[in-house]
Image (cartoon, rainbow, N blue to C red):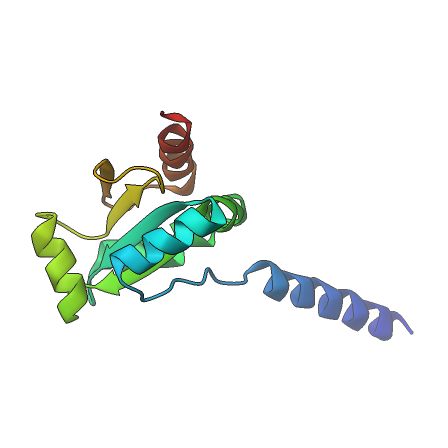
Length: 139
């Protein structure tokens, strides 16, 4: 009977841990399509440029973006788009914005046509969340 209780606790614990780690969904749409979606959903745009083999991108994906508080904040406040610099569209965005490294996060409010904030490098979840909150609170 004890073994059944232990198995039940392990099953419930592992099951809920798996549900908590639901990954973020990033679209692979064009900038203006994503900005149009952001306007209609009353969210801001977060455009993430990554690079295959980039250790910082890997850490950003596997550590920073898995933080539950950050993940919930992103889903609530941003339309999320991700492109690699190895694709034609990602390369064009990197060139147009003169991006110097990856990961590069480009932020735009839906009512702003020109103001784009660029954040570089992999930040820890807490500092990244603060930067995003600060961005959203600016007029």
